[in-house]
Length: 334
Image (tube, rainbow, N blue to C red; front, side, top):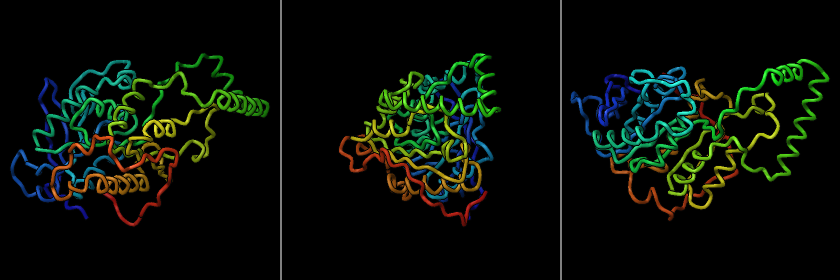
């Protein structure tokens, strides 16, 4: 059971002309300290990013649950709102998603990672991002010397499609509601699958190529990466549309030679990972991964060194073998 006494502290990072508002989740040894600034003994920190426009607590306060759990394992954890989100001031543009998809937050996140590591004497941080937050995390990791690893929850590597014309919406409605339409849709899907196979499963035109470039950069640097995937549309009882590109296999293959990439599918949850199964699975997989790659953090010793960004690595990317690992469902809760 986690002791909630003096568990969290509201903090601000006000350097570089931008003030981030956030929450610091203390490790057990520091919870009785009355100091405003706590030295966490050069351990690894966990840095949570917003998922699109959600506040830093995330859906169902799931980020609070994860941060409390990681801190209780010895990893000081920090949840911050990005500019314009939650408690952090800023303006959100109408093309906010395009801003994220182009790496708009990457430079300020990298600066704040540096500020955080210096302020709390951290050896480095692991960036945790969900969905759009995972996109920002990948971009930031590519430009931050203090990023020691990534935990990515259901990231995406494509750009949004243009709004479909009215006539296509009507055709889609007809295809769902009539027997002839459903039959025509099956033929269309089959033709699309054959076309995808014929062209060699090449990267689609709406792929986010700058993001893929950043992914390759951090994976080639040997950065430990944990990618946790929600159930596919097919597993959820929804048939994927024709020609659906397998981005996970593609990005894993990009990192196969030098990368330390672990890809795991989480069953029994959804994209938010906010139900009991999802929350427990994210916690347990992440804690196991942290203790595998950064065991020094538990004892408060430095974790970020040259071995984290090197070609001489013994961990092989789990390129095309996405697995579901059973989750212990006997504990947890807020």
